[in-house]
Each structure stands twice: as C-alpha cells, then as structure tokens.
Image (cartoon, rainbow, N blue to C red):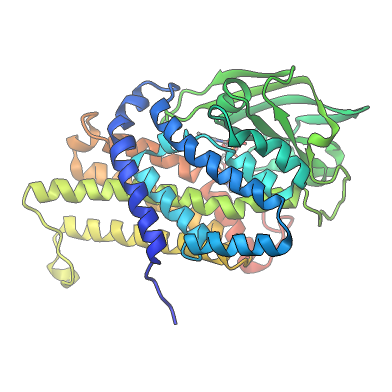
Length: 420
Ligand SMILES: Cc1cc2nc3c(=O)[nH]c(=O)nc-3n(C[C@H](O)[C@H](O)[C@H](O)COP(=O)(O)OP(=O)(O)OC[C@H]3O[C@@H](n4cnc5c(N)ncnc54)[C@H](O)[C@@H]3O)c2cc1C
C-alpha cells in the first residue's frame, strides 16, 4: 500500500521550522541580501544551539555498543517518524521558503561534514566533530571546485604530496560555500579535494581536512553573487599548506578500482545531499507560487481547480502548470530521501530529484515574475530575489546537465567512459 500522509512527528517538526522561517528568516531576508557577506548572527546563534545537540548525539553514538547504537537509531528514527532523510528534506524546504541564503548560513559541519561522515574513522570523527558540540558557532566546508575543474572533478590540479609525517597541499579552490566562516572566522575546517597522483585520474583524488589557522591556507576572495547573497562563497589558496598525515579521509592508496571508502565514498555523499538541494529549490518555488496566488487573490482572481482546461483562463493554466511542476519535484525528492531511509541505493533518484527541482524552480520563479509584472521586478517584494536565489539549485552539487547525465548513465547502464 502507498501512503503519502506524513507521520505526525514530521508534521510537528515541519510546523516548528515553518514558524522559525516565518518569524526569524523572512523578516531579515531583504536586509541580508543587501548587506551581502554580513552574517545574521541572531539566526546563527539560534541554530547553533540545535547544531551542538545534533553533533553531540552523533558523537555519543560512536561510543555505544552495536546494540546501544541500534536502539538509539530506532529512537531517533521514531522521533523523525521513521524517515530522517524525508524529514531533512521537509525542513530544508521550509527553511529555504524562509530564505535560501540565510538557510545556508546555518552553522554546522555542512557538506564537508557529510564527506567526513561517509569515510572518516571514528577517531577522525571525534577529532573533527568534537568542537561542534561546544563554544561559539563553527562551520565546516567542502572545497572541490577549481578554475578548470567543476563538473569534471578528474581535472583537479590541487596537489597533496606526502612529506614525512605530513601532507603538503598546494592549489586554489573557488566557490567554497561558508569557506570564510570555516577557514578563517570560526574554529572550523575545510575538506579539500586534491590529487596525490595526477596520472591516476580520479583514483588519485583524495580528500583532506585542513583545520582553521593552518599556515598556508588563506581566504583570498569573497564572491559577489546573483543570489543567496547572505551565504559566503570564498576562494581559498593553499600554499605549502602542511597538515598531519592522518588528516586524509579514506585510504592513501591509489587504487584503480576504488572499492574502498575513498573517492567513491565521498562521491556517494552527494546521493544524500542532492535531495537536500532539490528541497531547497522547492522551498523557493513554493514561496514564489504563494506570492502569485496571494497577489491574484488581492485582485479578486481565485485560481479554480477541477474544471476543464477549456474553461480555464490563461493565468489559471500557468498557475496549474507551476504547481504541477513543484509537486512533481517534491515527490521525486521525497522518493530519493525515502530510499535512503530504507538504506537503498538512490544515485538515480537523487539526480532525478535535483535535475527536476532545479529546472522547476527556475521555471516557476521566471513565470511568477512574468505574471506579476512590475511587482515581480520591484525590490519592494521578495519575488525578484527568489528569481535570483533559485538558479543556484541548478548549479551547485552537480549542474542540471550533469545530473541528467547521471540519470542517463544509470538508466542506460553506461559508465562515465561511454557517456560523457
Ligand atoms: C554559490 C555557489 C556555491 C558553491 N559552493 C561550492 C562548494 O561549497 N564547494 C565546491 O567545491 N564547489 C562549490 N560551487 C561550485 C559548483 O559546484 C560548480 O560551479 C559546479 O559544479 C559547476 O562546475 P563549473 O563551475 O566548473 O562549471 P562547468 O563544469 O565548466 O560547467 C559549465 C556548463 O557546462 C555544462 N557541462 C559541463 N560538463 C558537461 C557535460 N559533460 N555534459 C553536458 N554539459 C556539461 C554545465 O552543466 C554548465 O552548464 C559553488 C558554486 C556556486 C555558484
């Protein structure tokens, strides 16, 4: 039997996040869009409290026996209505409905944390996550992209060379989300992808944790962006940056078939994080759609449902199309998360969700601006901002084209060598 009803625990958490988004994010959305790179500290401090609790629970699980861990997993699954990943997507939709840029400012281990979770040893987790349970807000970041290596990660040129008890990193990483907060402004760290053997291609790429304050790691630039301007996006240069030997994540061996928790393991983190980006897109799209319907209602135009397409006005047809797109993206996203909750492989579904949601939200926001005319163009309302904010969901963590490529590869059963 298929049941689309959300468990009551998820609905309660959704309502809590909706209230937070409504009361703490929306009211400051314009301000932090205009004060690009400045931080919404009230929101950050509020969320830091939650982050500390979550990370502490994660670390406590490391000290438990298998039985205790299974019991704790059951308990936390019950708190999330049995579906923690679905809950995560729902909360991300709500917070991005509040404001996608501010949502990304949330302190925590971030995308780098997902990579550590996927491949780090328990000792590394204690070392890198421990600081996230105390003190002032901290950030983690993930630095993959370079000037000539974004979609094509095999082209990474940043290098890591073993020298005695250290790895020495050299290279430049661009567009690092929360890079400044992680590398410079808090006691955080950056997970950096670098090659230890360029001739080995992807197999030579490893990830390394570089802690804040490590000599040789410098934030050289903050991007001025189209959207999500509250979130800092940094360029970080590594110049003879020396880190301890055991700051490598996964095996230091170069294996042509990477069956270990190395590069493949880190790539697999995207299966868990891409639905989150899709959920963020859905939150922005929902905000734009609600705005359109609200403004139409003020003009006495109510969108009708259950009538024949021949009877619909042009505006109604547009709104129905936008809603259908949003709902399709949401269902794909929830499915990708649901599969993870069932510990099923979801690479295909995660990419489907992200590709669909990225396209849907850009279409919805553009249409919304078009339908609203000057109201969609004016800074008096947030619609023009949502149109700017939404596009990022079709760019980071795999562009729309790259996710469609992954979908095609999965469906057709082709490897990356056959379908490029
Ligand atoms: C605000 C922001 C935050 C970011 N945060 C991070 C971060 O935290 N960490 C990080 O490492 N990176 C981050 N990025 C970088 C982002 O992940 C990359 O920009 C993205 O992966 C695309 O890579 P690229 O810029 O090299 O573009 P390219 O790969 O050069 O792509 C350019 C265009 O070509 C298309 N294309 C490329 N290859 C193919 C192909 N094989 N088939 C069809 N089309 C193709 C792409 O879809 C795109 O349309 C961020 C970017 C932005 C804008």
